[in-house]
Amino acid sequence: MYAVEVRDHIMIAHSFKGELFGPAQKLHGATFVVDVAFFRKELTSDYVVVDIGRAHDALKACLGPLNYQNLDELPQFAGKQTTTEHLSKYIFDAMANAARTGELGPGGEGICKIRVNLHESHVARAWYEGDLA
Image 1 (spheres, rainbow, N blue to C red):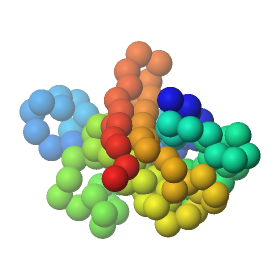
Image 2 (image 1 turned 45 degrees about the horizontal axis):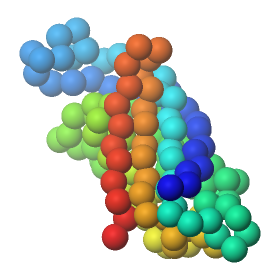
Image 3 (image 1 turned 180 degrees about the horizontal axis):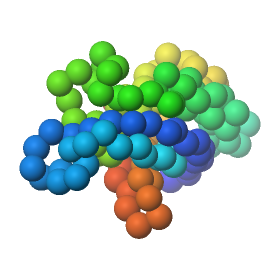
């Protein structure tokens, strides 16, 4: 299996509901380092997994509307806990859509799996990984 990974980051604010979250129930900030890996079984005729520049552009387009935002105030997260796990799936869905709609350019149609890894600190991270049908 071949893979290409791109990286970016976002700075957000959010809060959580429920005793499970302790002090994180209060509004707080987070800086997430976001890694997205695109997997293919075979390389394209150009010997790549996918165009790295287009993959990075697609990631920036997904993260841009979240950067420097209070996620509690965004309609796409209304009624949801914006945990690291939930955000990784949200980004996965956007990247899967980019692969399916041609935003990644030639080669995007051959992506068979994507992994989105969110580093919430130097000691903790969460990810969502899924196959593309």
